[in-house]
Length: 375
Ligand SMILES: O=C(O)CCC(=O)C(=O)O
Ligand SMILES: [Fe+2]
Image (cartoon, rainbow, N blue to C red; front, side):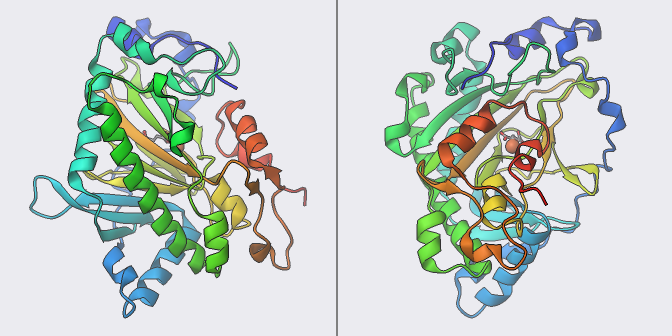
């Protein structure tokens, strides 16, 4: 697997003060042709209360709201702020539905766990390049500091650097890629990883039940087998409107949680042919379903196409946490989901699925399209 070596974008950004300094491999001439909705397009955020989801008296009502939102969009926002507080206290989740997000409030992921990883990742990317390179990707490896999805010398490149690590199970951790600076990074990441795994399993259980699946399927298919975390660093760019921080793609996994580390927006989701900016609240998790969820549900819940734009003045940072089934799982429509219309996707083993994903250039949902059965 692995990715072709490319320049460090943080250094490029520091060196390219004028528009003409941005190398042509990052410039996308067709970017203007993709319509972008006004930045106030994402309004009316419906709220799902996680407490109400767990309360037998209100569960039915809340989970049917969640189901509708998943069916229509498959995009969530998990907000860690309570009104009037300078610090996040309770995690709230919102799901983007047809014209809105949906928020799930009252979820108790400890504030300090979120704040600690946010603080440490900022400190990591502020280190001098030589120090960050202590955990540089090795040739042929996905994990470490560098880039992913670069498969040819011709393709356009993303204006970003990243650090990618396997975090669950412990046996998948390659500690040589875990930063030792700042010194608290590993503990902060370990804590964050466990909390997010629990949160992912909680939400997936409710979603699977909403699809009519029994506890046996939940245990077999919706437990987190593999979790990996990608720290994204998008430096400012003198030609921000001509580059992308992250090419359009859908995630390959079951469910992803994105934490925007600082207050610079940039994530956009595709809705009815238009790119819609996602306004992440401070301390919010943005949750989206990945391709495996779409395949498992035989297309009832869809993964969502998204991309990241960058800023002329300010850096942007995010942490994306991916949850996939166990490595020996079969990735294909669940028997219970196939129904009369037949399987819409092929079944493959998880390893082949991941190899295929990481050896492709990111291009919208084209990877998932390659998994569709001929009709
Ligand atoms: O930076 C973001 O907001 C999104 C990152 C993302 O889509 C990813 O890491 O897969
Ligand atoms: Fe993504």
